[in-house]
Length: 170
Image (cartoon, rainbow, N blue to C red; front, side, top):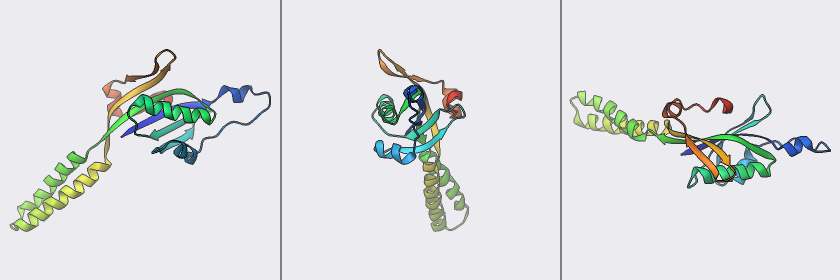
């Protein structure tokens, strides 16, 4: 699973318009309808008047995903400032093993059938719980370069482990 946390601002043309045409606004349903398969995780304004758009989107590459998101946001009247792409992994296997181990504790009983059922139930519950737990695998700072297009620079692993966005995107 990949998520994209972008900081955008209303396009400067809105501020420079001779007649006030109003500032554009973002709505979750508009973004979801414009991006096939997208899930909006966060959408809100910052105190500085910028917007944070956090979208879960699966595309072949981070560049493709950011390009598609930015194209939609530009059509809605926003300019791209910066972004972070995050790759997430689930802990299904760890949950399964933990649940299997927890269920095997019931093996202390003399009934082997109860031990088997307990181990199976523990594994099932552990895998379900593990599938809901997500850990940051990697984070990339995404910036636009006029000559080469989108550039994704991997952030240090300690930043990915903390799973916190850059301060500018907080």
